[in-house]
Each structure stands twice: as structure tokens, then as C-alpha cells.
Length: 354
DNA sequence: AATGCGTGGGT
DNA sequence: TACCCAAGCAT
Image 1 (cartoon, rainbow, N blue to C red):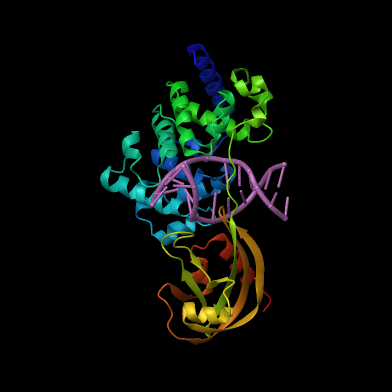
Image 2: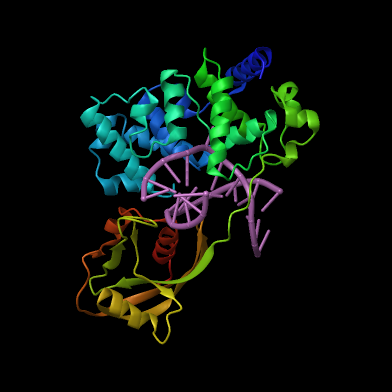
């Protein structure tokens, strides 16, 4: 790339961003901790979804110390509904590390900041450039889409190896006077102008610098191979009440899907030759009597589909309740972090006809 | 490198 | 409906 072209791209992008950027909560600060929180929330998550979570989170945990001291259940409750819950635990782990070993100051170089849990190549570059003004690449899906078009890069962006091409391109192009506006500008452009479908090229500040637009192939880029289809599990869930009116809740394992979140006892079917009651007795050490249907729905994860059927049930006899299970009051259950499918069951149960 | 990890919105 | 997509990271 020649210097004049790069200067043109830089100035067009940065001035467009400074002029047209959306007014977002995390753009009112350069506090590295708050930028960090916002970047983690924004991983694979839409801006409109993140805004209310960010506001509540920063109000509750305004400093690294406050987050470091939080209890995990309380933290997950703040994250409830946002998804990818390991982000929350990794964020707290990283923040604790900063409080304990960096005097509560977020590191300002890529080598150190990348050691922190939950901070990968993108998030490292985002915090460094936005909070500290360090000229580092922050390559996300937006940046790959925008640059694949502007620079006519036809590599498959689904391949991890391809990202290096874009990181090098950014380090070559980046505005060293204002790396924050440059990086955010690329992402903003991808979010509002250079969209996956129907890009608004006629409104684009980089239109005259864009090879894809020049050749009329913006709709063909980026190249991305398709992901494989997800599998479907049939899941039957029971909301069990005992004689005191308490309801049985189970804490999920500390690793894997929905780690450490709470759910109602559930079984995955089909399991040959056994009823839900029998499986519940085996898995939870209790005898129950199944009641009426609460609701049924499909819950789609990124890699898995749950076909849900939930039922009311009453406790007949309790034998050996596993440690992961607890009888809780309605008020206590409302305080437990639960994934969205369980919230749908819980809300339907509370509103049921009695 | 390939897979697991949530959720909601768009077409 | 059934995809696809969104400011990725850990393993």
C-alpha cells in the first residue's frame, strides 16, 4: 500500500468516526476497567443488548476492587440473559489478578494484558487502543468484513489463520495519532455502513478507497465457509414442590454448558424403557408424581438445540438428595442465576392457573 | 485447527 | 422455517 492511499483511508475513517459515532455509554470514558467490561460484554453480542447490562454492571461494580470482591452467584445474576457465562467468571478472574498483582492498574502493553483471563488478541488490542491510545490492532468480525472489502482480501475469514492477514493490514494502516478512533471507526463502519448484507456503500467514507466497491463485488465479500449444523436434544424438566411449597433447584457443573447456573431437575430423552419419574428417581434420589404441562418450547444455542417440555410435579418421597440440589422458596429462586430456558419455565410456572 | 460456549434479532 | 449473524475466547 502506498503512503498516500493509507493517509487517505486514515483521515477519511477517523474524521467520519469522530463526526458520526453513536453515543454509547462506554464512549463517555477511557477508564481501562470500564472499557474492559464493555469489550467483554460486546464479545459476540449486539450493542443494543449490551447497553442496559453495561449500565447496571458499572453501577454495581464501578471499580476493579468492587468486582474483585463480588460473589460469583451475584455476578452471574448480573450477567443473566447475556449468555456466554464463562465471560463473567473470566472477567472477574482477570480483574482479581489486576487488583492483586498490578496494584489495580490494568496493564498497558499487549504482552502483560494478554495474560489476563478472558482477554484474547481482539480484547487486548481494543483496551490498549481505546483506553491507552496504544497503536495496536483490534481485529473482530467487523474489521475483517470491512477490510476484506476495502482491500479485496479473499481469504476465508472462518479460518483462524486468516486473522493474521488482517492484523498485519491494520498495523500497516492504523492512524498512530488516533488509534482509538481508527479501530473504533473500522468497527463502527462495519456495524452501521459496511454491513454483512446490503452495505450502504453510497454513504461510506471509504467508498473511493474501496477495491470491492470499485469492482462491484462488495456483496461477494467476505468469503466465509459455512459452519456445521447443530444437534437437537429433547429435554424434559420438572418443577417439583415439596409439602412446604419449596421448589427443587439444581446447580449445573462448573464446566461446560451454562456452567454454575441453576436449573430445575431435567432429563434428556429419549432414554429407552424408562419414564421421567424413574429417571428423576435415579438421578436425584427422590420420588415424584408428575403433574400437568407447564410449557413447551425450543431453545436454540449456537451449537445445540433443546426441545423443552416442562411439567409440574410434587414430591412423594425424598431419599438421598445430591449436594448440587436445594429446596428453595420462590423468593430465593428469584435470586439464583438461571439461563433463559429455565427463566421461561419459571415465569410460566409462577403465572400458571392454580 | 476445530469445537464448545448463549442469546436475540434479521431475512 | 431455517438459517445467519454479533465489538471472541479457551482448550
